[in-house]
Image: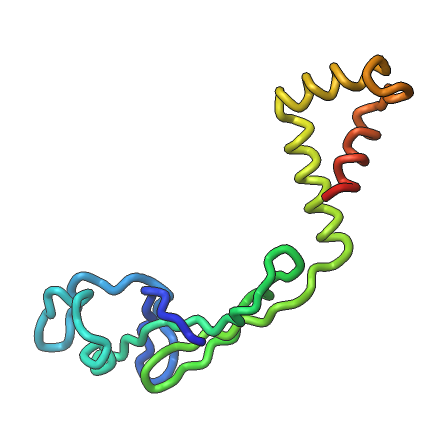
Length: 143
């Protein structure tokens, strides 16, 4: 399902020369200036070659396992510029990098660090004198 983004393209002769951007507040033509141009209806904007941007993204997107490919394809139509995005599965490296980043954030929290040090001295859990790298690996394993 396509959705309007609030951005517009100036597309005289079917060629994008400006955008995506917000509409200008006023627009100068050869013979006059149109105030409140940004408040005009899309039908009026089309007369001046301004088309709304519409996104065509699959609603079944799962950000935990998928990414959008850049750039999207642009399809200039009579009443809109349709951006179609392609999604792909994250690579094993991307998934691993995300786990590393999350584990780094967790291990940098002062409360987590204090708790880990208190529990990691071997007195609470026998044999649990782990290095920071071992602690990070254990956190990654449950992500």
